[in-house]
Image (cartoon, rainbow, N blue to C red; front, side, top):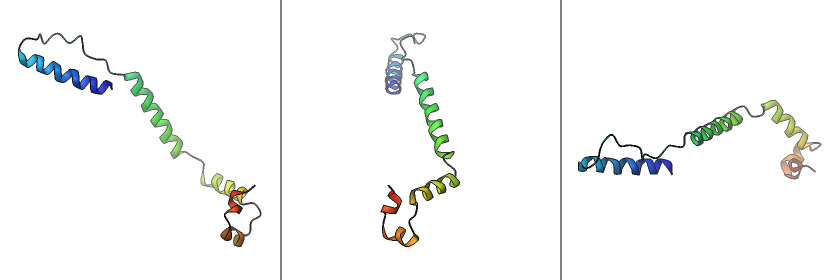
Length: 87
């Protein structure tokens, strides 16, 4: 909402300046932008992207899948999804 507030203030400020009854040096009532929140959100985004890119390696994924399949033969695997679900 801070961006909307900033935009609204900027528009109102411009209208007051164009009216000629406002001092251009007076800008103390401008809303502050939430820099800390934006930095925290950006950091969280970078962490999530890094986590998705650096996820488990293919070898780890393959070994997990083999552990889940267990003793199922390839024919059983094709017939039933219960082999993948495991115990």
